[in-house]
Amino acid sequence: MKILLLLILFAAVFCIPAQTADIMPGAGYKISALQVEQQSGSDTLSGQMFQTGIIPEASIEFGKGDTDGFGLGLRIGGSQFSFSKQLVELNFTDNGTVQATLAETFDLGSKVSGSYRYAVVPVFYRYELSKNNHLGLKGIVAEVFYGTGNTEISGEIYLTKNCNATSSVSKDYITQVEKVIPLIQSQCEKARLQSNKSSTFQGAQAEIQGEDLTILIRGLSPSFVDDTDGIEKQVRYGELSLIVNIRF
Image 1 (cartoon, rainbow, N blue to C red):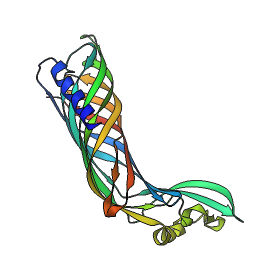
Image 2: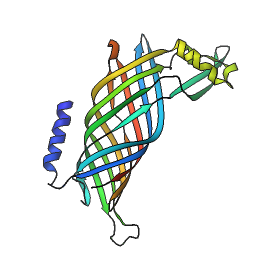
Image 3: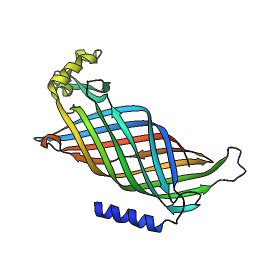
């Protein structure tokens, strides 16, 4: 798979007409989610983290520029992420029967942080806007992309799904869910993450190009296996961003 991705990237470089690279520093409001799964016997334990915030990022783009219509490009970029809250699904029971399922966000004292770097090939369509438009816009672009990169991650996460503390919560806690926190901390397994792994990057974005600024909405989702402490954990990171870039 890695060899195939590298071949695609090299092919893209040679197929893209020679032109000046667009350097695009910026920042985005990002909705980020992290899911970690680990096998424990016949059960799959998992935990989720959720975070929002404004995070800086930067990229270098080749092949898009002022090209109109369909095109093939190359983008190299990266950003970072940080989580401090877990999204926990609670099953409230009465006499062993699930009465309600609620998803709550808790600060369990667990934290995960990291960064990613990628090189992807965007397949895009660019629509050139009239130069007489009153907003000073140059074009609208829609794309899908695929490529490779590295994701560095470190921290700890509680695996709350299929944990006794969350699978069978007394109905008495339904108005005081904070009481569940010490139960999760004492009964649910905590997974440690510490790796720098190659991963595939895929996603889609739509952007509005101005003279110097670009506003875009992007979704991407790398995934990889973390084997810290000799235990394999499937890690999936997802991000939806509204980004403002300055184009040089």
